[in-house]
Image (cartoon, rainbow, N blue to C red):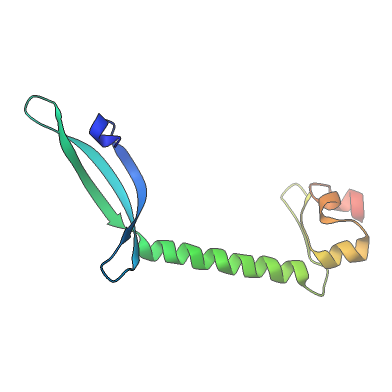
Length: 115
């Protein structure tokens, strides 16, 4: 619709269905097509099939969720800090051992607050 109004669209992701009812993900650029009188006569779309990278991104996200669950429920205290020494990781076991919830610990200086 935008390209038909003269507004070109870049990197727009669309889901396409194949004849075998499979979903393919396409990254589309739509360019306005104009006639000799400069009036809009249609749209030219150029697409890139990004289905495999989309599947990869989903698999990585699933693994990250599994890792997050493993860290959160580990039977050992796991905590982390950012480059400024502030807490950015605090699992359930750390909360149990210290008595400080994740919300209470996050963004606090680890050494001066807890050690």
